Amino acid sequence: MTTALKIMTIILIFTTASSAYEVDQFTKRSEVPKDSLKIIDAEINKRIEAAIKVFNSSYFNERCNSPDPKKRLQSKFEVYKELATQLANRRDDRGYLEGFAEDLPQDYRRKISFDESIYNTKQASTLLRTFGLGSVINVNGHQVGTDKLGHFFNEGLYIYKNNQIREDETDRKKVGTIDSAYFERNYYGLRSTGVKSYADMVANFDGQSFWEKICVRTAKEAKTLCEPNSYLQCNDKGKWELNPKQNFSLKNYVTSGWDESINCNSFNPDFNEGITQKMAARVDAAKKLQPCPVEPAKCLEIIDHYRGYNTKIVNPICLRVGVAVRKGRKIDPEKPFNYSYLDEKLKTKKDEKSEPSPTKSTPKNTVDTKK
Image (tube, rainbow, N blue to C red; front, side, top):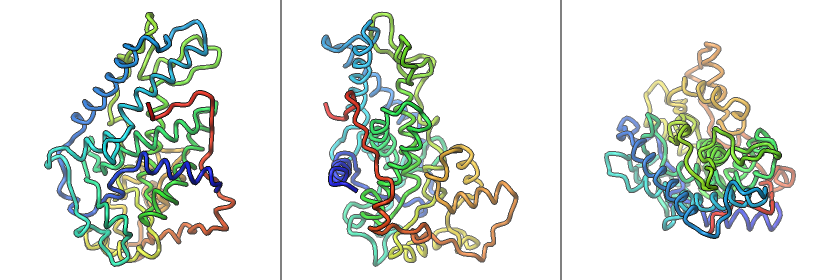
């Protein structure tokens, strides 16, 4: 990894990372919070509308229907900057939407203290002890950590920006999974908290898709900036407006892949045994050796939903369980699952020299999260 990329990664951490580095989705799982989908959707849509209003009110911004292709493109980049300000900038030490979810009334979230969590082991990382855990919320029936909103909007934006120069959408998404996995293996996961969260990577992936859909790319020769299925469209006056046929809702993105008790984590080998024992103590006796996934059938839904990308963003255990469910094979309950990252060949410094690191794409016009 080059010095420049190390600096870029550190900057990303301190500009987008949340105060709560992990979430416990095993403790008190049966205490399901009220569904907060409508509340969070309303806040997100309010912020999207505010970004469009701010952009359109500026005399200096380029019109999105300008006859000059460069000015049309500049208009697109500028409206993205406003959206980033509303959705991806930090509020204190958390992303706006993550902070909003953490501030929901208590019956809309499940807050687990570090002391009562699965992470309270002798080997627990200092970061986890210091910053604590994020809350669990219910989004359209899916129990997910509030940190996933930070991954969706903030890290999703970063990965979108880093790969937007690539012409092919599939290529952009595949390289995006490499970027995402790199961060989880390093400063966002194993090297900081000792946890590699596949659910974080799924939220990153879906966040990248969200930012793509703001203004879906058209062919180079097209006179319009965005495809008809985009969230935004350019009106005859050269102003941006919401597409009435494409309403945003988190329900179109959140899946069981965001749930760390289904799309399991992998742990630093030094922490694995203690955390696994805590997980086992919180599930049904029949699942003591295989505490995750808590709902095996959901793994099949996940691998089908993320077909083409699932081997990069779904935990290998969940992948194997999903395949077993599809084929009707019983999983031997006497065979323990290993959640240690050693099972995934923990990287050494020697390995890192040959592994893909975040791709550094620097087109002339990039969407920036800073004003």
